[in-house]
Amino acid sequence: MSKFQPEHFHQQAADALADPQLRHNFRGAMDYLQSKRKSAFADPQEEAAIRDRAEAIRRRCLRKLPELLEQLETNCTANGIQVHWAENAKQANAIFLAIAQSVAQPVSNPKTNHALLMIKGKSMVSEEINLNHEMAKHQITCLESDMGEYIIQLDGDTPSHIIMPAIHKNKQQVSDTFSEHLDHFTPTTDVDSLIRTGRQQLREKFRTAQIGVSGVNFAVAETGTLCLVENEGNGRMCTTVPDIHIAVTGIEKVVELLSDVPPLYSALTRSATGQAITTYFNMISSPRKPGELDGPKAVHLILLDNGRSQAYQDEETRQTLQCIRCGACMNHCPVYTRIGGHAYGTVYPGPIGKIISPHLLGLEATQDLVTASSLCGACGEVCPVRIPIPSLLQRLRHDAKLPPEQEHQPLRGQQSAASTTESMMMKAFATVACHPSVYHTGTWLAGKVRHWMPDNMSNWTQCRTAPKPAATSLHHLLKQKRKGTQQ
Image 1 (spheres, helix red, strand yellow):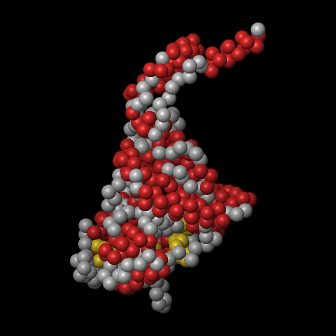
Image 2: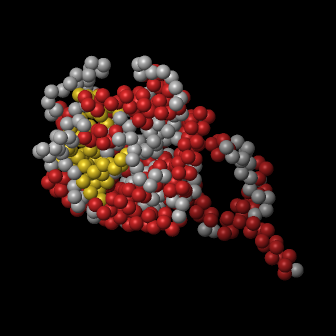
Image 3: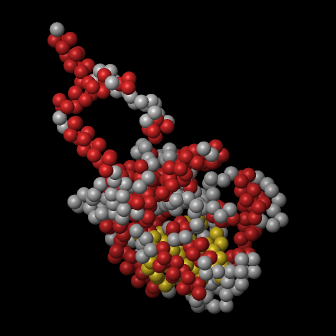
């Protein structure tokens, strides 16, 4: 479980900014990813066409989401995939536990004394439900097989990026982690040697694990097919070697047609890592059939809501669910690139985390995150499905402070950041601004007492100079200018 919490965002951000190694690691990684994306979208017209098509597909699929989910369940069931529904993390973990406990002939793990071994491909939804720690309470080991996830699991750490979970570490830090946790490891900063070491440690685990766990990038309602995008091959191992495969995904990942997948796949890989195509693309349609030599004997699909219905019920916040989890908004965010992912204290950090986390955790816990943006618009400029992240942040800022508009349903934690003092000050300003004579008298008076303004204004002057009113207001200067012209 993460030691970082969204309620402590300000202190966690300050700690990150004071860590020069962390900032150096993120700066280098973000510059690399920005360069890769720029190369992948060298033709602006092609980029616009890809983004237009990806946005249109996601919008169409979300409009039909309830019926597509039913169609997905029907076709998956017909294919032999067992479909489960989870309203929240607790229910999802209960489903995992029930499946695990149904596994016959558990094999003891002498090192941890855990009875069952789950081996996981990369899945942010499994992070969202805190699967590893929940299963550990029942003597079930969840071993990460994605190399970045494996490194941070050894450290007891959490992902700092949704596609590159260990991006906050450099080669030396990974070597130090292996030296501390792996027997017979010779310290090195050679990347190939580090990767080879990790693979050797994981290879045997794929054969001994009873259950493989994966996420889902696209769930195709038309055919009941689960699509998984990856580069390391661990996803294919997790979904084919163990006897049981459990896929877990948010309900928004469903797409209507198999032909919807290639455009979204192209937009995803180019935006995420600058690749035209990833090394592996897995399509899982059923468990092993009679006569087949490999593949899981049973496949389960867990569809998780966990607050997504709240985002779905409002036409504006529904756009949040268009996300295909590429991470491009993080890579280009001036806030994320300086403080990294842990400071947010949420599973999904950066710009996308700031608009999805309020639905998963409520605005009480995430009220500081929605203000952690300069609204520069970089996230919206690179989003492959054109999510208007800056305008959604403004909507969430409003909802954190004020009651819902007449046409909107209240969000979880609505008005949790409301301040009586702030409200009274804004009402007072509104009154002054609506009465010109009072306003001009106030600006004239402020100019007269400008030298009495304090230099220390609490948080405002931590990184800014104290503001001083102009000696003469713009209104008065223009008035004098008009008089001079007339004379």
